[in-house]
Image (cartoon, rainbow, N blue to C red):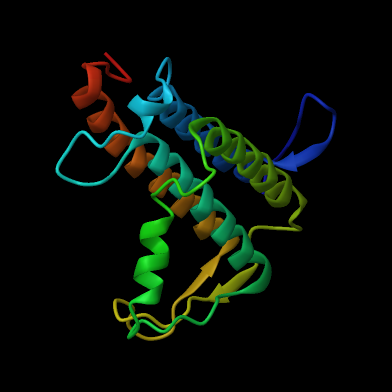
Length: 177
């Protein structure tokens, strides 16, 4: 694995830094969709779904933390026959009592920093755990820290697309172009 020296002088592997760099770029795109919006705009659904820009940021924050916990501790047991996991997932998209655009954005910044610090501290990206059984998985599926990082890039990118649609429907603003 190739190594590189950071601006602080520490040596890290290039693969890890490349993944974190792309994830940071996607986070930046997501945050750009909220530029110059007020609380009401950021919490207004603009499509037939209930998605909002602030809700998307809250969701990706939750997802990052859940996946870092997976890398560290393995999967949580989930009862997919119960509505609870689906309700819990839906709540990650909703601002609840006491949550504001400002608090959600600050929490996202903290989560990003926590993710970067944790990933840089991993001895390598090969640490792996079996995913919890789920109706959409066949057999035993294992994900390494590397695959989790790639998934976070994919998930954040996907939600950047959602955010672009919501923002454009809100006021015509586009992230790019």
